[in-house]
Amino acid sequence: MILFRSLLYFACLVISTTLFGITLATFGWLLSFSGRSKIANQWARVNLIMQKSICGLDFQVDGLENIPSNNTIVLSKHQSAWETIALRCILPPEQTWVLKQELMWIPIFGWALAAAQPIAIDRKSGRRAAGQIIEQGSKRLKQGRTVVIFPEGTRVAPGNRKKYGIGGGLLAEKTGYPVLPIAHNAGVFWRRRGIKKFPGTIQVVIGPVINTNGLSAIEINKRAEQWIENTLSQLPQQH
Image 1 (cartoon, helix red, strand yellow):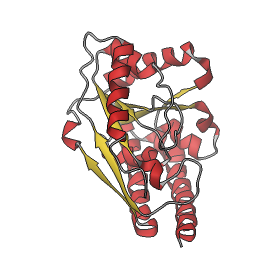
Image 2: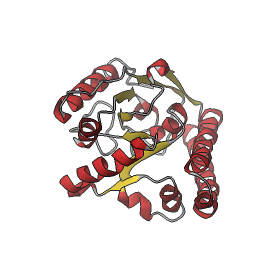
Image 3: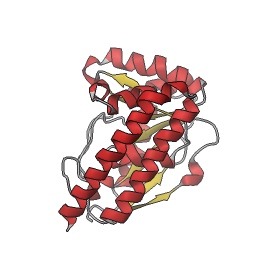
């Protein structure tokens, strides 16, 4: 039944992404960024509801009070596709995401992403990608948006770690905006490369804001990584 429900949800995900994607790709450009964000966030809400009703997959968030009233730089653990959906509903509505540029080439989905004005980088370009994050991220922060970054750059299975990229730390150092770290165990229920969505409750923990004034990019990254990984080690690692 888990496989059947997972396949049913996947079909619903494809349909919802197509419908919302076409809407954003065709009419989104006529709307303000706030209007486009509302469409993208509604897509996320619909999928969270379908995950719960079809797969029995829910989530719980601790630390919502740590989200500042002003915009911030989010550094989040990346274990599955789940957080790319859920964070749209958990965080303030107007968001800019740092993502790999290959996603922009996907028909319909990539066009919808373009309307959401992400920072699309080539992960292999190193210094150029970091410069892109700083330049475009600074602009988006000044526009009042939350910048969302997965510092590991790719999905990492539970129990594993990958080196944290310096881009988010550099953006924080250059702009002085605070960093909001997020840990979760989504990969336990929605595996990195698996079709099955296991029933249960994903635990999301939002950490205290890291004040970046006077800190180097390396120190900012170190503090965020330590908090995220230490918090993750205390979350359930089995569904």
